[in-house]
Length: 150
Picture 1 (cartoon, rainbow, N blue to C red):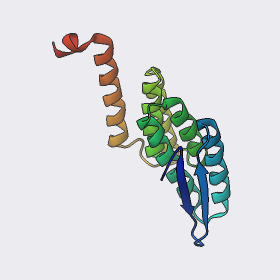
Picture 2 (cartoon, rainbow, N blue to C red):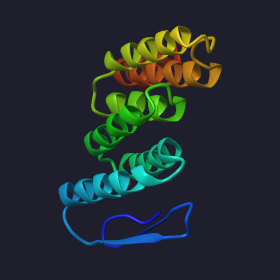
Picture 3 (cartoon, helix red, strand yellow):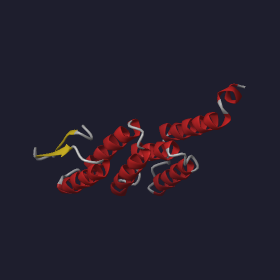
Picture 4 (cartoon, rainbow, N blue to C red):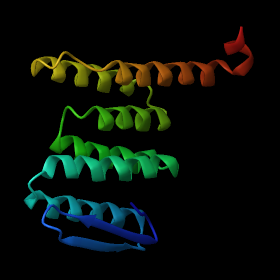
């Protein structure tokens, strides 16, 4: 999936394609993304496609050091699938990158409770490990490298 200044092509189950030239501002890109997600609403597997697009875009924005944009995109993806583990993990990472590490455990606990309500056993070990990694990284960055090594 391409981003800002490039082309994004989204295919549907019927073989139709939408092509969006993303050469505008990040704000307009988010609007384009939402138009694409809305257009995909008519697809047979809307939730899966919506979360796939949201996950890919959010990862791209995290990699570009734009966690606020990633957070906004993931939150929209979670509207479509509130128990999606990959989006939950990205949301925790976005909060941590924004310096809001205290939000990551709340996101994790909410995800865990939601899965429990659906009798899905709770959050996966992989999701828990993301939270642990974020906490460790936050403690290292606040202690400093020399203190963390002791």
